[in-house]
Length: 255
Ligand SMILES: C[S@@+](CC[C@H](N)C(=O)[O-])C[C@H]1O[C@@H](n2cnc3c(N)ncnc32)[C@H](O)[C@@H]1O
Image (cartoon, rainbow, N blue to C red; front, side, top):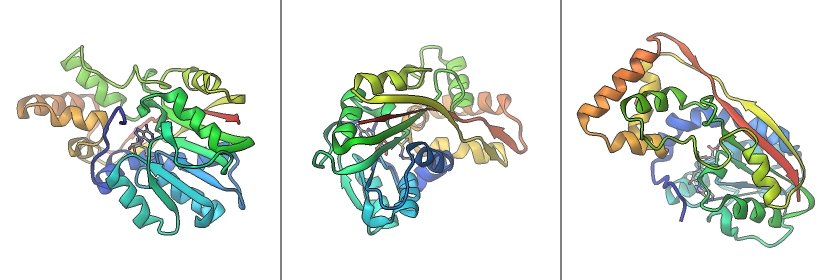
């Protein structure tokens, strides 16, 4: 079972994290060198942001995608009807050895129950010399898109389980996981997905929709604590348009 459940509507995900992840997709596909004619796999596809980028590059018939969340699998199938979308986890991919040229995981490794096994599975289903690539927010460096939120939550409750201890979210750790998974010729880099928000409310509202660890945290607060958290965030952010810096650690390696 995944460490964190994403049993939410795809549209809620789009508003919360999809607004950033869609900015990462072309960069991760570039990093992996995805080009026409290749067979590619999107691991932890969610509702299909990266899947769409892969379809645009290689055609739907060359793309497969997996995710453990039933609602996301449904959404990805609806959005990309000719893609082979399956309900599965990275740690146990339902594909033969050497089935793909490239396997990618965008914002997924930190949610894997066993990241080394998940990355090793990605390597298994990629042909010898094929590429595995992944990216994960820089949560530990407070440069991810949720930094202002977790700062406010921590100021209210210093023991809060923010996402700064998850696998891959600190500098160098994603590349280390790639090494432990047996990949070769590993290169580490940084991807940027800075995003402008028009108002404080446009930034805040998606946190109240229960998506990911931040959404689950907000949903578990009493109405008073939730209002307090919102006010702490509001005090730390401007009312008018503001840009949230979103930086992701990325790694690519060869199978
Ligand atoms: C932050 S979302 C990223 C979704 C999509 N890749 C994107 O960039 O928008 C994390 C996704 O990882 C999936 N996930 C969680 N654990 C997983 C695992 N062990 N293997 C594969 N996917 C997993 C979740 O269901 C969710 O769809």
